[in-house]
Length: 148
Image (tube, rainbow, N blue to C red; front, side, top):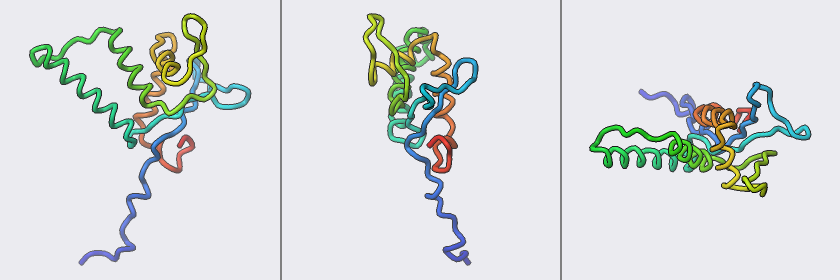
């Protein structure tokens, strides 16, 4: 005999949000603020279509490299890994809050160009590390979470 319907959990109530806000901490671990507002990044989470596209792209890269290397794991140069990581993280970024970065000629960057510049800058690697950790944590995207 099956329990009454009301005894079942409505699992959809635990669905995660598509995006959440990562309040960045500086390399010293102190939360960042600009004029009293949190500095951070709105990110697409592990349950979002954007995250699924990144997984597809990463799998395709691995398969392509193995096919080009007689089905053996291929070494990927650091510069290539940095470019790919910046592309992936930029695709997971819904927006920056209170973050500015200039092009080498001093022109302020915006949108995807801004995301790429920040994520590909080795001196700003602490941002990339926080983003990777954050998007890997499903709990950060729960409706009751402080970040979602």
